[in-house]
Image 1 (cartoon, rainbow, N blue to C red):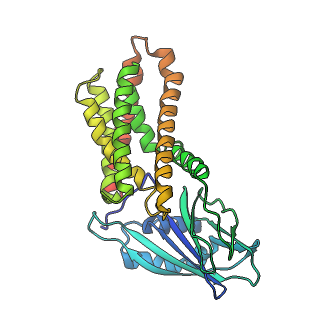
Image 2: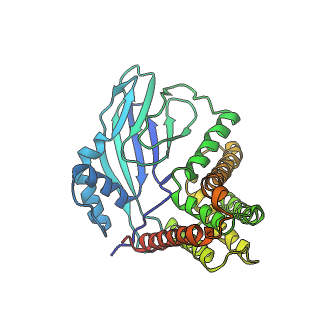
Image 3: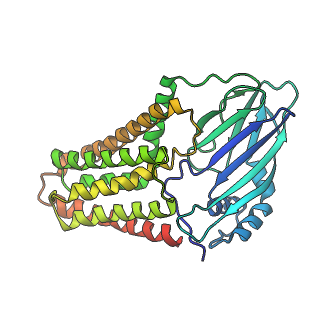
Length: 352
């Protein structure tokens, strides 16, 4: 059976490049996970979901759904739809887990004469994704993030697209970092809750969160700059395993051991590479990478603190001094988190 991954960080797994050509046509390249894309089309059509697809089977399935796929690509010029013709350009589903599985869909259409702006909408994503728009007639390529099937704002045609200011970059990636955790990063939420459940004392929580923050900041930056790279097909199962480990450790001990921050730090390195998966292939101008990276990281930190604050105010504030708190709250919650983490580990390795 072809190994497959149930990605928790769907954010960033779909990438779109839209090219506006001088001959009054447009073309789009859509890169996404093949099995996920096929399953979405099958679900919409009310068909059974395929498992263990080969590249040839995935290509055949996608071509069977070509009309449904084209219908989900909504390109409009001055609010007038330009129907898309689609084809499957490439399907890669390597047996080597070091290599990513992906499919590239090509879409083409016509640009009406005199069109002044174009908008994009794609209905086959369930999370945030990036689109890069390039106009051969002039202007600078621009990358923006869109939420799920939300349509883009109009992109001017044949005019210099004003590059976003630093403030706009900070605002956009601060929000993106926060959303990557809350609500879209359920696995990261469980990991943070695993850190929180060990103890309700402030110092142990801060020690662990600080170790986690430093670690994921390091690998997030190194991965973004291409210094390190590891396939999501390896990172994702390890992240799931880290969730289970922290939760099981909560059951085994009720205090912060000397090695716990070190373990959390190591797991933070993995999570940082997972975070970077949402930001790679952005094609940002070099001068924008630093503010985007810092803002994204700050957004993650705000989200983590939000998760801890909500957990504290909802549960720990009221019950942490009760003698039954550990037996009735910490252990059952940690056991549940551990079970989910172990399930995800198996799921992401073999797609069961």
